[in-house]
Image 1 (tube, rainbow, N blue to C red):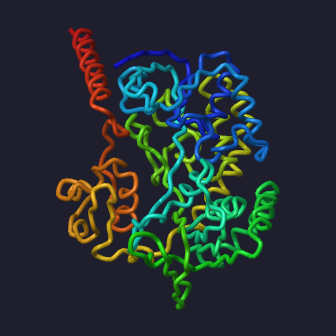
Image 2: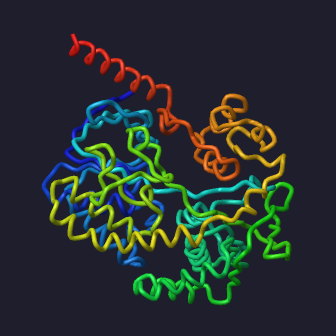
Image 3: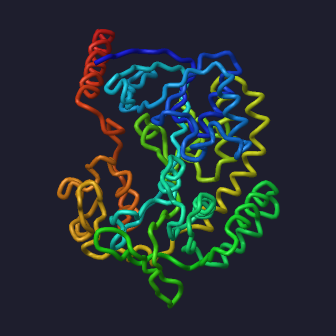
Length: 439
């Protein structure tokens, strides 16, 4: 197994919109900049598939900047552990170099690890063809044929509309969009767009794409029906319930920030997000954060935060300061998003006793509900100990039962024994050096 090291003035983790913007702006200072991502190409979940397309002019602009800048891109790589003195242990997940481990050293780190979908368990949600809304969109971008397939999009948040529009553009028969938020909140949210010209234009564009598709508010899935795969979904809207036939259910209840790496580094969290100052600096002096792990506010806010973080981390304070007033305005929009799409209490009772909560370990709600905490449930049922490392069931149990994840421990992602051996050796060497220095 190969093990290599590299040194950077600024290292960016996550090559989505925020990470790309951070790396590009940091590189303007002449610093040595590196960026890593677990995907083979830059773009993240938002810009996946736009690398060689003119369909998204904003993405195209940043991809061009990224290609022209002097930036080392470490693709198909995951951080599994961290060491003292600004060092990360990174493993390759590329088929050509699987198990290759690198030790990356940095002076300043910018964490742009984005967010993932929040999944809430309900009867039948583990059946084939029940997918995350963003997950189905990503599969279609990667070539999954969707033309002519009946799709129901359900859950909460603006992502539902973007996914539905994308699926319809690729020929899907989008039967309806079920939004759990009440109508009065959405009206207020829509009125706020009058002061956001760019977002208003985006909203009208999506509305045209979805012309004729029913959009039901106060509506959510109760259960999925089918034996070996999805056949229909039972929905509720007010006092009415009915079954909607479909080939795919794209379901997601807004987003959860990926804070694991920042938390492992010791960054302070606030209301589930990484706490930052106006320059995107976290509670750790040489660690910055940008994008959806600081707030869920859309791609425009993520790009802006990435720019500020890139400038601030590379010593371009004046350039960072110029962008702060614009960020404050978008922060207000992010707060409105959280308020508008806050989840209703009825969703806490969707799962019955035999509904699987932890998909990795097949743990049902009846097996965990009598435990008092996340830690106790893990010890007695293995809930959260599977391949996803609690990324799916953790947020679900937090919403259903009010549990909090007690601590973040390495490896952040599932790692091979070879990778763990290298990480353990690095820790041992570090401890020996520290002991030697203390004598």
